[in-house]
Length: 263
Image (tube, rainbow, N blue to C red; front, side):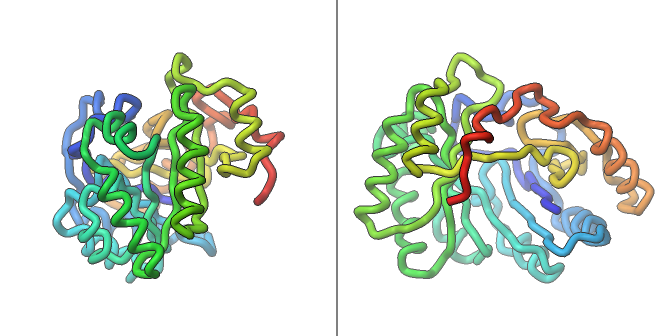
């Protein structure tokens, strides 16, 4: 069972592919008490693995990020924080089990894409990982424009002596920027990155917004219910709505999954 908590919708970057920035949202930051209540409720599900991803927005703009991580650890969740590395020190202070570094290029090209001078901070977090102060991996947003940069990123990591995984997700919801099939298949063949092979939306994965609406996926964003009383009836309704969803509810199956191999 995987809960993705979007604890804030604030972010200093301005990524063109962000599914959040154009949303008409209510609350922009999650309350710690409601976060704890939601995790306690999902903890009642009979799953041996309890995975939590703290996302946003950019989680490192939240001053008490460590408190969110501490609550989740107390409830025995394995915690990953998704970050563009805006505040490396706050990641180090929070001590999640993993940091998921969000990238779509390298060097100045990455800064231009994010419209934020952040690459030097990415390197700082990579140093923390190399020194064993943090554990982490990279999630790379793959487009038709940055395939070559993915190979450069892999070479750069090898040169730094960093053997961390790169998970690549071809961009969703923007067919004009989608990479072509030949490039995706070559990436898989070359073992440069791992691509997702299944869609857990609304079944094994639930997205929690700051106002406690539960969604099926960070991309599809189908509401499954809202937590107000944080009780079993609300959770049962959410699970039932999730079960009603079709596989790949956004209508874009991972066509490459047949070529994906475990690495």
